[in-house]
Length: 539
Image (cartoon, rainbow, N blue to C red):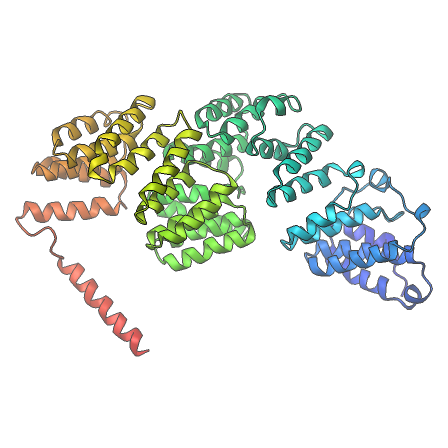
């Protein structure tokens, strides 16, 4: 059976990889090929087979085919190879793009690199890339090499590769974002790409979230239906705790493009924080139908399962990181799960991993909470101060230092000063107001706590604000006011467990019952749980 190469090429161009790889097997195994064909033709045939296998996602087999092709290339006279095959090819520089009229060894090496990347063999991928002379590296090659250097923490070399990308094409936004995250100044990047987008990414990378949001908002006015800008804004708003604004921008992005997966695990975390379980369920269902192999999908599954089964949620978070071990929100989710499972030592490891990839407010917050849970006040204070140093204009960082001081009775005055400084920096920061109110309560100044919190009622429709007010009123035996605020909290968030439990305690208190005594339903639940445990032990 004669296998025409142009037909395999046509199949590859049309994405029919299954048929192409079956025909490719015939091509490389024919008797004539094995006995009479020149090494050049054998190499050419093996590259075609490798392209088909890569497209079919059989990366290990593709890797083997490409390596065999390179072995045959070594015995081909140098004048038969073409360094210009990439530019003369009509196909793109993907693993399916080799021009079959000539074998370019550097292109084959790049195909081998992409196989190693697909198999998460980053060290082998980088070694292969370093065998390609810098003068002949294409845009795609430089971008891939920058990513590999960054993974291996060779940041200076990564910066050089990303800059080469922008010299080839100033619109490689991946390279701009990477350079910003690697600490390259906006001035240096703007010399390569003169746009406000660069400044926005540099502000965010340097933890100046307000500056980044202002510039993204400016860009959004010019490009009002830009889903990418909406996602970038939502991500930053999620980091700094602007939950309602972040949810709104995520929803706008999904309305523009309902098949977006990027950052959707971040969106899932926000829906969980708002106890919007119906939207969270729908989101996860949608993501599973869009692309069940993405890291974000397993991150969203982890969020969904946290209420039901923390161990299953942890398994999904780990699956997310096996798909992409540089997925920051996966490490954050893992750290939060370990904290809720009372494993702060493991949480520290997870938050450190996120911090090493990109220090941001959430990794600092996670580290501080974990160290405090381990009673490592010195380490917690160091992390909080580092956050304040890297984000000098951040009220959240100031509050973080206050949180550490508030742990000890001797540090409450320092904590109060930091909370007040946070409120001067950002007067509308509810988190600092709630923390300061808690200090007032601890010091017996309930009236000051109520006065402080009531100032925020006009501008904040927030269930946590109403719960704190209800707790303060209940502690001062102002039960009707406490009842009103618990009911307000549940109107805002019917799923809020703290409000439900607080209301239950308050109703018992109003009836003259012991608020800590379990009700009949709870006793039945305990009995049912004991029965289930006994049954499980018998099984």
